[in-house]
Image (cartoon, rainbow, N blue to C red; front, side, top):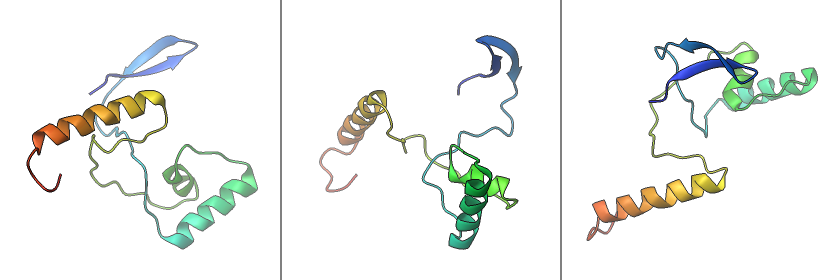
Length: 101
């Protein structure tokens, strides 16, 4: 996995320990009422988060983590599409001749 660095003004401040640090995937699942409450509070305060978990955490709720899969990509850029295509080709070769992947 990647080394994690704290950076300010394009300069490395320090290297972070990986223990307890996770790359969090989307989509994320929450109880409807908890998620609505978190969004209402964020809207009222003008707060922006990069994911639903950030809003739920800020609203004071516990956010639990479940193991994900590195092949579960979030497609947001052209590079992501290229990577997803390569993964699909790999899976097609791996499971060639089967009716399922």
